[in-house]
Length: 121
Image (cartoon, rainbow, N blue to C red; front, side, top):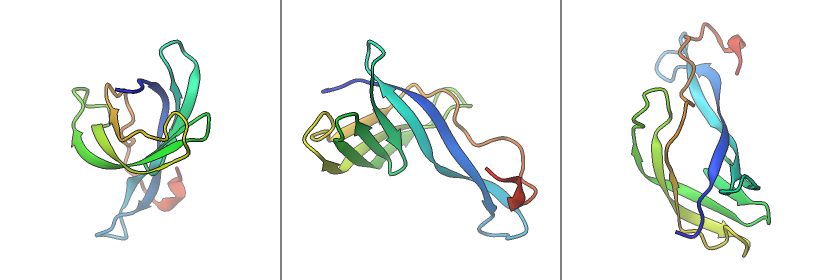
């Protein structure tokens, strides 16, 4: 393991027409937005759609989900193992090959049903 980080952020969902029934609407994941912190609480980067992890030095790893497991908390998003798809830069994330998303809290789509696309994000 080269680095351990704690993330604080959100999963952003949008209202969209159901793929099988255009008269119905459902929540679909737009993407995550999270800040990454080291063990001492210093911000070291951010996480966003891709899935992408970007260090403060600009180095980046874009991953591809290799495995997923339901969180023990039914209200939390799944735990993931991501494998590097591509890296950019030579800094902190420039050589990262694997990422694990563990111990998630919350983040599932809203429970309320959508009435129309006008309900928004």
